[in-house]
Length: 357
Image 1: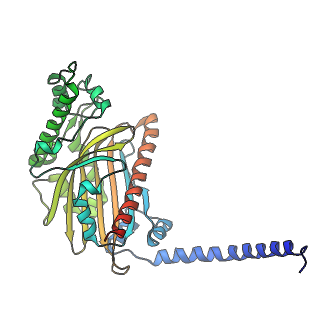
Image 2 (image 1 turned 90 degrees about the vertical axis):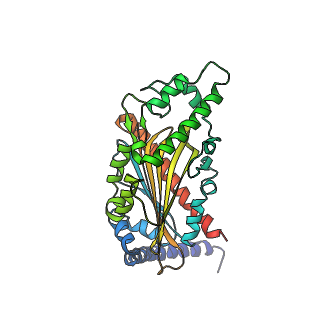
Image 3 (image 1 turned 60 degrees about the horizontal axis):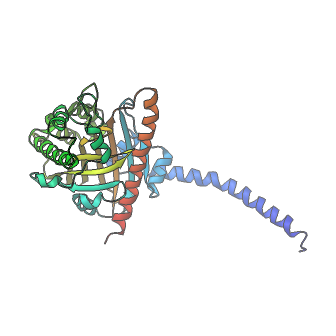
């Protein structure tokens, strides 16, 4: 073949490849869709993902091939953000449970600046590492009931006004000690009285009742009103209601979210049984952004797929500033941060557990 005919031959070959690819692509797509339609997740997980979560065929296919999936769930857009996450993890469920119990290692690095498990019963020393960020210290100097840049109850705001001499050079250290004491007293009351002892935030002109927000949020979660009613009742009525064979603990942490470092206190409960495991992380306090929140993690074995489990997470949080015209921009940012955080958590958890020995 002459040099002059080679470019033409290559052009014809390229056209043939394109035509063949165009013919094969619909067939491949149809095959993947058919495989996705035939695949069934275990038992009630299939019902949930098809019904309540409404996974698309594309999302199902990505899950089947091992990729993590996240999506926004229905929520009251004026004050709530909800994100679903799911991924297959080729590791024993027990490995995940043990990792969560070691919460100080499990939630370490990246956006987690500090994580500390609280003793049972709590001790004041558990909070010795808690330090208010500089911007919070500056805000507390001028805090008033109904006007404060830190989420606190009325009595806590009054204590920062009456017990701290903000003109003294020792004011930052004194404010940190007071915050440690307030946090210690808060978790102690919660362990004794449950949700009735959760804060009533007075950082704004309108009081925010954390217990009420948590209850209405849980009441709107099909995961807890239809699929796991015993867990829903436990979350609402703890400590009067218990979960057999469950373990739980509290922890606090300083985390990066949005524009401000945020101090959070959470209550983790872990329940294992032959059908899998459920982990809940209930937000009891957040110094910024959120009134309350709940992360629900369900671990479901799937013998048809082999050793490992499906990890399905639901993150719900209630926050101020999401309503109105400007709130729509804030809401999109919060949704983006929560969704990207859920995806990063799925990816890191899968990587960590599958490479562990």
